[in-house]
Length: 274
Ligand code: C2E
Ligand code: CA
Ligand code: CA
Ligand code: CA
Image (cartoon, rainbow, N blue to C red; front, side, top):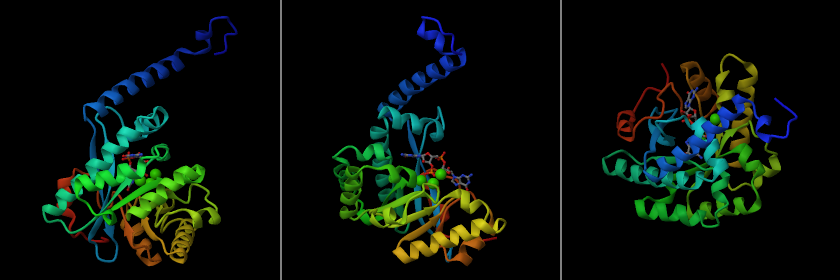
C-alpha cells in the first residue's frame, strides 16, 4: 500500500515483496538451469487429419522447477530467452535427425521463437549453424512466432525472419486470430504457416461463431497460399469439424500432449477421429 513515507521500501506490500523475491530467485535458478543444461525439450505430435499420420511435432521446453507460462515471460524480460531459445533449437534439430536415423519418416519440427531473439543480428546465422551441426535440411524446420509479437516486431526483426526464410526454413504465426493483425501486415510478413489459436478450436461444433472464425481463417490462408495448423484439439467433435472445414494438420490432447522424443515412434499412424 502507498504509505507516503520517506522509505521507498514501504511502497511495496509484503505480497509484492514476496513476488519480487520469488522472481529474482527464479531468474537465478533459470540462469543456472540453462548453463547446466537442466532444461529438456518435449515434442507434441502434429497429425495430418485426412490420413491420421504423424507429420510433425512442436518442440516445447520443459523445466522441473516451473511451467513455461511462468518462466518464458521471465526469460523474455531478462534476455535469458536467447540462450534458452538456442538450446531448444539445437536440441530439436539434433533430435529430429536422430528420429529420422531411427526410422521415423520425415517430419517437420516446429520451434517457438520470441521476437527478443530476432534482435540479435546473428539470429539467422544461429539457425543456419544449428541446422548445419545437426545435419538437418532447412525444409524440416518451422520457426513459430506469436501473432501479437509479430504485430509489434520492428523491421529489423522481420528482416531476420526473411533471412531465415531465405535459408529454406518455414516461418509460422502462432495463436493466430488473437493478435489483431491487419490484412496488409499479414500480406507483408514472411510467413507460410498459420496456427489457429486454441480459443477458436475450443468451441468448434458447439459455438457457431467459432466455426465461422475458423472457416474465415482457413479461407484467408488458402487465398494467401498459407498452410494451416489447428492447436488445442481435445475432442473428436473438434477434429471432425476441422476436417469438414478443410483444415489439414492439427495437434492437441486428443492425440497427445508433448512427450519425450522417443515416444513419437508410437504415433506413426493413429486414428483421426473416434
Ligand atoms: P504455445 O506455443 O501456444 O504452445 C501450446 C501450449 O498449449 C503448450 O503449453 C501445450 O502443452 C499446450 N497444449 C497443447 N495441446 C493442448 C490441448 O489440447 N489443450 C490444452 N488445454 N493445452 C494444450 P506449454 O508447453 O505449457 O507452453 C506454453 C507456452 O510457452 C507456449 O505456448 C509458448 O508460447 C511458450 N513456450 C514453450 N516452449 C517454448 C520455447 O522453447 N521457446 C519459446 N520462446 N516459447 C516457448
Ligand atoms: Ca507454439
Ligand atoms: Ca499456440
Ligand atoms: Ca497459445
